[in-house]
Image (cartoon, rainbow, N blue to C red; front, side, top):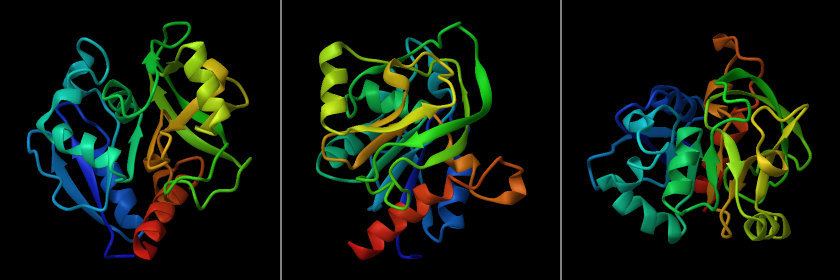
Length: 227
């Protein structure tokens, strides 16, 4: 798996890029730093957009990052099939870039939430979720103030009918997301976004509630090696 190269993007205000890179290395891959101002994907095999508060969340979360020079390369590459994962702020950026439908709004109750959260896996038909089982319940950390997934009725119906809901909140909806949606994918399945943080749940040493996040990284590395 060491030949697989996963790019980890850093924007001004990104917080979880080092955790993301460590998770990639922990699974056996090579983490390649990608800087927001460079229009160069460095020939990576997949891209991870980690969480944080890019550009201070001005305008809307992810709204400025969507126009970064790197995104000018990433958007067409993702539309051409490059595997892309966005967590938390990364999910918000993917929605702002129209690589995923819908939007992330302020949490119901308007409070920032930081806790361990039950998540149900709804789909394994992506390169990021193949090592899970459909219906499997996992535990991942969440930490966000704008994580309430919203979309119009037609978009929600299309997501449900097309099997594009990848994760739902289990054991209670923490932020008011419609249909308990915690994560979705695009129609092709190569782009996945979710609010929880798998990169914070990959090894026992960190004291995380689980190591359930490992499967995201073993899934993509197996996919890339076997491609």
